[in-house]
Length: 257
Image (cartoon, rainbow, N blue to C red):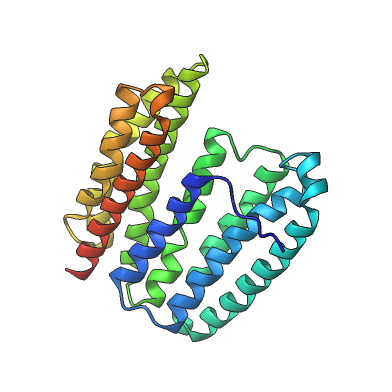
């Protein structure tokens, strides 16, 4: 039986990097690993759901219906079981953190039904939702809620700036308006370290947390200032993967310092 997987390659990093940072920053046990599997399975289940809702077009729904049902049932079931087990194994006082990514996921449903998940605000919401998985996974791995929230927010800021910069690059190649996205991406990239400094002081986090904002913010700022050509979009993708990996390594180092 064929399995369906999400097509949005950028979303893989928006989920993977926060989860890796949360797990490696702490000491993952059964609860953290179960929650990680649950969130990954739920992420995979997103694609067959889109197919069954007709979001991938009538032909895809007709030709991939069996594969979509198969993937949705298995991934949905895995997500539910691992989520329940992870919550059971978490300290009761920290179980509330699981509500955060679930709430963001539920808030994504109207965007999907209205076909607005590909808008700038839609993509930024998805990045926020995916990165929020670091909160329950981090606390389940032994991080404080403040530390896990710091990982979530820092990566969210970076992915927001990168998302706007990439959207501006694509719009420019299509000869569509791109100036607003470029300006917003640059402003967000420049502001991210200062937001992280304020966050560190407010939550009592590592004073050098702002360093983790630099890789993605710097890359977004470069793309916003000098958008690459269409022939270099693959290089753009790999550049963002490298920047996301660097930000993750810094977050892990700071969490374990």
